[in-house]
Amino acid sequence: METDPSENDIEFTVAPYQFEPISVSTGAESEDITSEEENESDSADSNEVQDLHVDQWCDCGHCGQMPTNLECRCCCSFNLCQEKMEQGNLTCITEHEAFQVNCLNRHVLELAFYEHLDNNGPIGDEEPVHELYRYIAYRRFVRWVWHRLGRKQRKVLPSCVVLKIRKTFPSEDYTGFKYPRDY
Image (cartoon, rainbow, N blue to C red; front, top):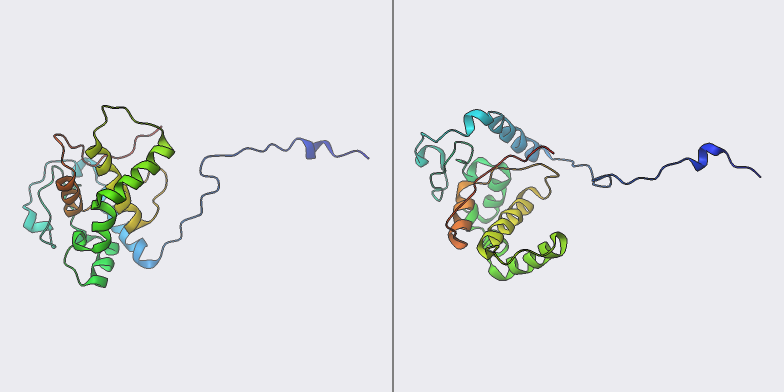
């Protein structure tokens, strides 16, 4: 019994993100993403030095001046953060117990650090621990609020969140928000 030659020519390949679930957003999430896309679409204008005083864009009272217009965002301007704050009757997302446990607790971040090492390999001895903990804390905040963003998808974090994480894990030098590079 002969088989059809076209059946044997089937090529099995695996592509990156081939098996990732398709993101389905609710109305609140899509509204939040739309407003952020509008704010981030002006990338040339948003990287200019901020002229506005913190009181003009901060509603939570915990934000501080950031180096660029793009980074001057309060947690109250994110719908998903507002939902979490309303659950606990809070004025700032940094007061939320889940934020403090997941993004500021050294023991939780240490465990996430080991997971990061498993996925990304060992780091050099010169790599500062505070810098890695900040990176992991930012990622945990994004995971908590937006769940999964996907490849090359980045969000500007609220100023209050960035400053609280930087205060907990200080450094001499900070990078700030950057758009992903095109490969």
